[in-house]
Length: 516
Image (cartoon, rainbow, N blue to C red; front, side, top):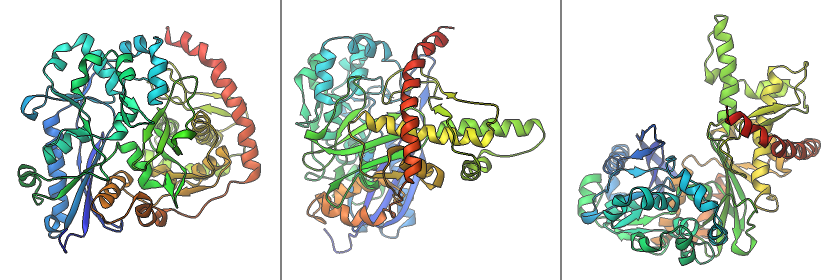
């Protein structure tokens, strides 16, 4: 490593934005650049993305970052890449794309998921992967392609994920990482492909499509001359293949610190709830939902549950307010309404309104899977007003968070929170009360890129192991613990029992409403 090489570049290729972020070797963010992502949707449920455009967007982001940092190519000690998970990125001869990628949003595999989930073999698959089968996943998508679009697989040499495709373009190496393997085609205990899982998916005959697995904290490959010319970086720069963005974000935001496992929730449009555990602590639920995804720490995984809709529930209620005001000639924007949430929450009285936050038209996927699930208020009376509805929706997000952690076993001892919603005091306090635990906010701006860059820092020898790196990169970014009020924790615990009873009881009504 050259004396002037004092930065790590983290690439985070999300569904909406491609980001390139520069960090010092000790974890301080220096600058970032981004390019808007684009994908196409179809009436058949397809959601696809161009592989060539994705690589082009990556090089654009890297060049934009170079415009912000003097001598970036000389200062880059390593490059790390993470990206959106799931989905299917098929590559054929000459490392050329085989059609467009099927994204995690693609719904075409739904009938295949229903067929496979109904088989006895799916229990075996779930016991190995720890992951519920859904349309997002490459396993389900490949199984659907194998039956309905076999020509796609016949023309492919390797099935990759988004970050794997970028790594291939950066290094010329076809590979994937243990996190993708552990929850899609493998066993989270061994971090290797599992023959029983492939058989359960009906993909034994497609085994040759699965790439080799490399551990990014131990193995890097040099940036090729072609990639260097496209990105403006120096050929030979070590490139690290990070894990999937979900666990990279959790790692960067504090799912583990001070050598101890913790829990981390990213509250955005969707809610992602992760708990770091040793393999022996994993609890698999009877509903076969959630994920178990390896972390780049030996013997440690993240158990994950995801709400389909989180802050979009609040956006919906606030937009109702915007629309009503407009009827009377009063102009207010959604951002204006968001700024009032904490005030409305404080103005409301703690009551007994329940809100089930299933506002997404896709229903819910955590801790249960039901595409027909819909949002609703329970317990309204004539004395309730708009601030009470705002409180109910915020508390509904807290209840949904507890519902997800309860499905993973014991509730965590502390919760770390990231995402824009973490700035809301009412939401932070509600999350703490719902779980009955202290909450700490991560100030890390680009947690996903940071998580991948931490792996690169270990790979190039800047740190001995991930825990040493976490001590510099993560722990200082965690705010002070905010303790829940005991009376609020008691109230939320009482309401949670009603919340889960109501959720289970109303499910037959969702079926009736969906049959209209």
